[in-house]
Every structure is written in C-alpha cells, then in structure tokens.
Image 1: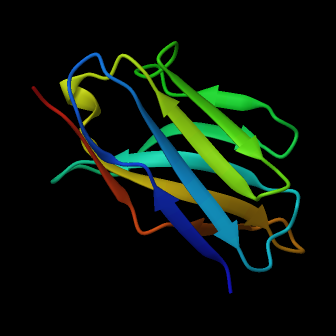
Image 2 (image 1 turned 120 degrees about the horizontal axis):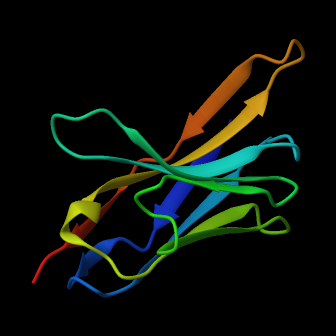
Image 3 (image 1 turned 60 degrees about the vertical axis):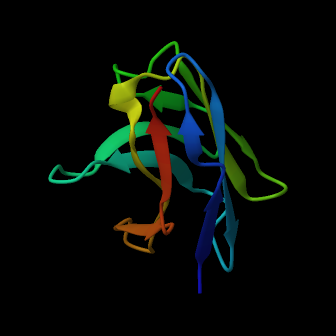
Length: 120
C-alpha cells in the first residue's frame, strides 16, 4: 500500500515563503511522476507543478518563477519551495504520485492535503 505524508503548510504573510514536503512510502515504481496540486472551496483541484523521475519539471503559469519543485529519490520525497506568496495561493495543497501499470494506464496516489494560508 502506498502512503503519502505531507508537511510544511501553515500561515504566512504575503511575500513570504513556505516549503512543503511529501514523503512516499510503500511499493512505488521508481519510474514515477511526483507533483503538487491545490484546491480551494468550491473549485476543482488544479495543477501546480510536477517533476519526473528524470528530473524534468513542469509548472502552472501562475506559479512559474515563484515556486520550485524538487525531489530526493533516495528518500522518495518531493518538495515544493514557495516564494513570493500571494493571497491567491491560499489553498489546500495535495501531493500526488503517478505511476503506470503494465498496460500503461495511470495510477494516482494522493496525500491527505496540507493547508497553506497567505494572509496579513
């Protein structure tokens, strides 16, 4: 069974920084895509950033140049460094790991979510 445990959320003032962490445990293929998504009340979960097992990254336009995703393969952990935070970044942030089964169908695993609040 795969488990994702997130940490690092909290309250921060506009312009501040936070670092989210997500540790994955269990049987996970080393060939995976790790990422972060976020959701606010009444809205769909939205993409924030992903990083492949090879280190290729992808970001939503709204966070490019402010957020940085990274991973530690030895620890099976993904990070999201968030700088220059804005009120509109307030959301519950979810960690995601995507793998493919033997016929290449995607299988998604999700963390429990961590609240990030940007407010003065």
